[in-house]
Image 1: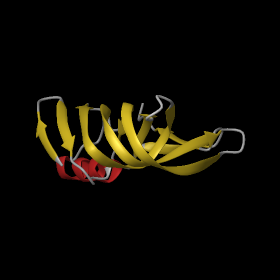
Image 2: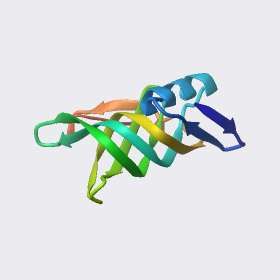
Image 3: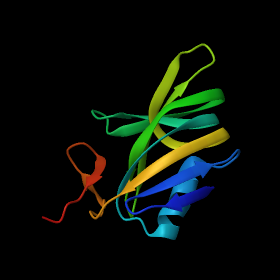
Image 4: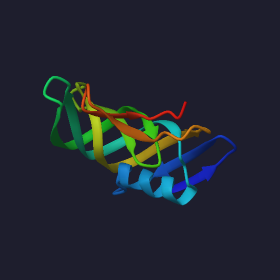
Length: 137
């Protein structure tokens, strides 16, 4: 992983075999990022995707392997959580998408993290079973 920090953003490049979420955790810890939103594109050969069932309040996950174009990657970074969603394009031009628990870079992965002043700490919302932003208002 290589990156450069600008005033309100961090531009990141991940290399083959880098793990996306693991790399973002390292970046968050190294740069002490308490709040930010990110987007990116790239290529991966393995991704663990999740789908949340609000009624059951549970995740199901599945790991996919192959050669995928990352057509969309977005999410947020807080001091306690990285929440990311990913869309993968297949060789047949179909797409897969969902919550991204992890992904492994096959070619490159380019991400921009826009940092902010608001700490994006999470707390459990008992209505949905999800960890949501906890604002100190």
